[in-house]
Image 1: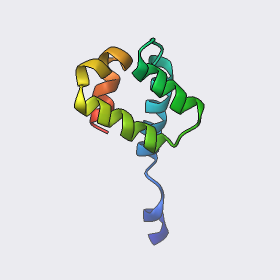
Image 2: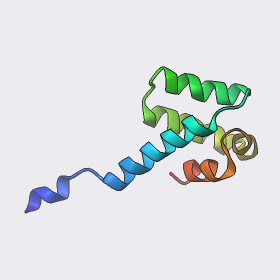
Image 3: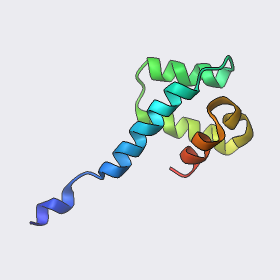
Image 4: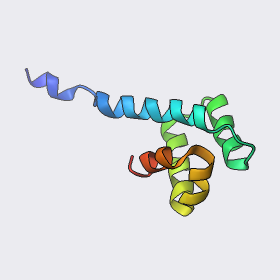
Length: 80
């Protein structure tokens, strides 16, 4: 029964997957940030790398990131 505690955290995996899907849907504008997100997704960069980068950008300027990917997704990533 002790081996059950070593299962992956599926909630975190699903949250990461939802963030990646939402980034793909929301990063549609002509800004350089939207283009950088789309390029990272196209190049199949690691989801952890993409989320970390987007989070750093949102930390530096949440207003601009909210304009690019939406306020709700920006807040979700900042709290991830």
